[in-house]
Image (cartoon, rainbow, N blue to C red; front, side):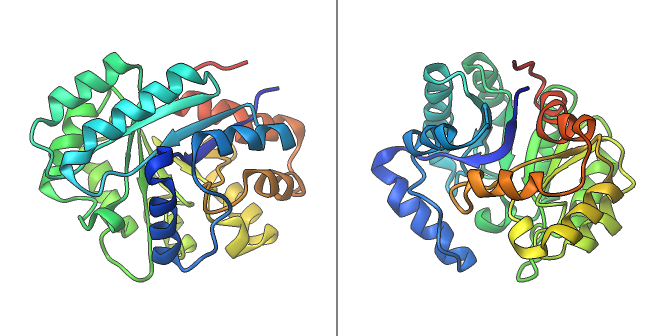
Length: 264
C-alpha cells in the first residue's frame, strides 16, 4: 500500500530557514523542521508515507520560474516527490510558464492567496484558471479568519466559472473556518479537499465528522509540513475509525486521482 501526503512544502537549503521562519511568524506556530527536501525525505524512515505532493509559494512574480525549476529538479532526483508548481498573479506570460511546467514534469500548481495578498477570484488569477482548466489540477489555500483573500465563497465563484477546473481546496476548504468551508463548497463534486493544518486544531472527532461529510472519495491526507510533522499527523489520522478500504482512498487513491498519477 502506498501512502501519499498530499500537502508538503520544500525549499532550497539556502533560503529554507528564512522561508520557514516567515511561515511560522505568519501563523504563529512553532515549525516542525527546517523545510529542506532532505529533511522531508528523512521523515520517511520513521513512518509509512511513500510519496509527497510538494510545492512552494511565489510571493513575487520574479521568483516563479526559479521555484518551478527547483521543484522539477527535486522531483527528478527523488521519485517520492510529486511536484506542483507555483504561479503569481503578476507573472506576465502565464501560458508560457504553464507549458514550461508541463515540459518540466510538474503535475499541477499551488496558490496561496493570503500570503500572495490576492483574492482567489481576482481577474489575474481567473486568467490563469482558464489556462489550466481541464489540463492540470491546482491546490489553493482556502480560508483564514484573519483575511478575506481566500474565503471559500471566492473559490465557489471560481468553480462556478470554471467547472472543469480540478481543485484541492486545502485545509478542509477553509483553514480556521472549517465548517464554513463545507457550507460554501460541499456541493461541488469536482472539488477535492485535504486535511492539512486541521487535525491539530480540530481534534479527531471533528476531523472525522468533516471527512465523512465531505465523503471519503474526495478527501486526501495531508500534513502541511514543515508546519506539522507528517509522522505524527499520519499516526493521529490512523486512530480514527476508518475501514481499510476507506483508508486506501484517503491515504492513497484520492491523491492519485487528483494529481493524475499512479504510484506503487
